[in-house]
Length: 219
Ligand code: G3P
Image (cartoon, rainbow, N blue to C red; front, side, top):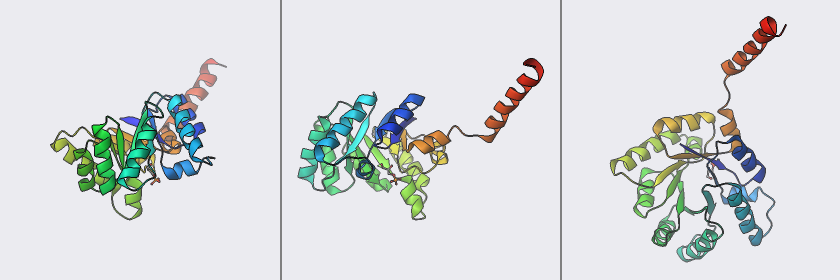
């Protein structure tokens, strides 16, 4: 399972990469808004910096909400760097835009996926990735992981090539459950990736090894 880091923060990306478990980056307009970016030119420079940090896919989202503007924006974004994946929101215009990008060899990530039917539509037009949002479904008392399971079944039924990139991850448990479902990738904030390291028995075990070594050998 590929681990993408869900942030536009260069420090977090650097830290994630330095651990050796991060395969790529996903951003969205809200995450970009948290960085100190004040104009359109710096948006693209920021994306370029991210792409130069990692040899992996970097999803960057179009802001436009109509087909023609999505196309022109996505084409420009795709030219920033070879690692760019153009992230397009689900919807009629989005699906048409993804079809255009597929036909023009531009890789895509269909975002804001909340149902199996939306996942099917994205795969029909050749999306490289789909991003179903687990946490935001949990927030409204739906089971986000259930959606991931269902999409996995639907895609397996037809040998679909579109990759499932589980997004809106809110815990380390979401990540490990995704691996049991067998999704292709997850994207998560750094803190939940770091939480995967934690187990109280590991901490107790390390302390015991250290104490025993000092007690019997290192007297
Ligand atoms: O980037 C898409 C997704 O991961 C957003 O997550 O936490 O804003 O629901 P969240």
